[in-house]
Length: 130
Image (cartoon, rainbow, N blue to C red; front, side, top):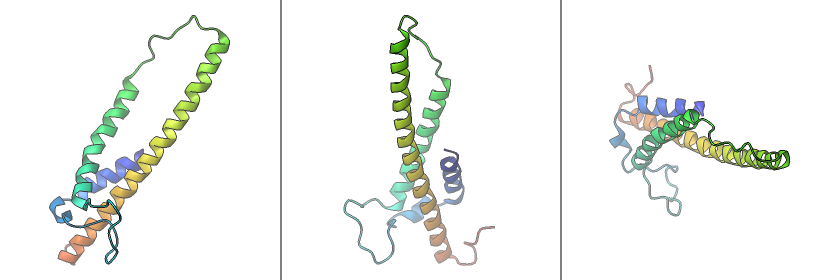
C-alpha cells in the first residue's frame, strides 16, 4: 500500500502538464495497440488520480470501523467455523487488493516515466530531474 501511495505522490509531483499525455499510448513505439487499448496516458492519468482518494477513503473507513453487533450466543464450534471462513475470505480479499495495488503502482510508475521522457524530448536540458 505504501508503494502505491509513494508512486501516486511522485506522479502528482512530476506530472505538471497532464495535457502532454494526450494522444500518447502506453505501448512501445511502432507496436500496434492492444485490442481494446484505446486509452491514452492522459485518460489513464485521470483515472489514476480519481482512484487515489477512493483507496484512501476506503482505507480510512476500514480503520474507523469498530466491531459491533457481535453475537455472543453462538456455540464454540460455530464460532470456530465462522472464524475460519472469515480468515479465508479476508485472505482472499487481501490477495486481490494486493494484486490491484501492484497493478496500479506499476501503471503509475510507467506513466510517470513516460511523462519524464516526453519532457526530455521537448526540452533535453530542462527535463533533467534536480
